[in-house]
Image 1: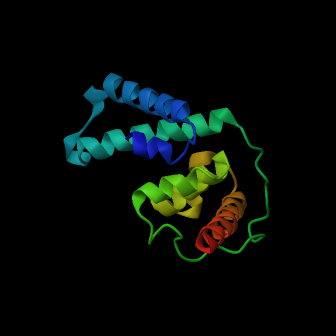
Image 2 (image 1 turned 60 degrees about the horizontal axis):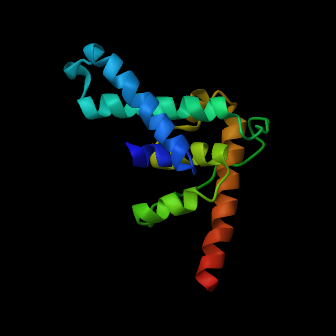
Length: 148
């Protein structure tokens, strides 16, 4: 669960705060868990992820750039597909907080553009912009690391 929270935060303190808030919510609502709807892990994972997203929204460390729906083309491919998990966290840590959250939801969690926008309370065009920003920044990082 801590690794999940690290997808959204560079700072261990923020990741731990999200994890603690999520696990406290799991503990308080354990009576609401219904095994017929899924496994306990998936239920608690969703709660912790949602708490991390709430913390991302609350922190508002970065201003959102609102764009028109068709302003940015949808990125193709998953830049994390061929990486080891430990490398993914290193590269995610180099992204701004909101871009990291969008990237984590879309590429790692498998959310759609619409679901990502809804989870972060931003427009779909803004999600596309952050995905494009993610790919641009990661491309520069990958290219510079290959030249070393």
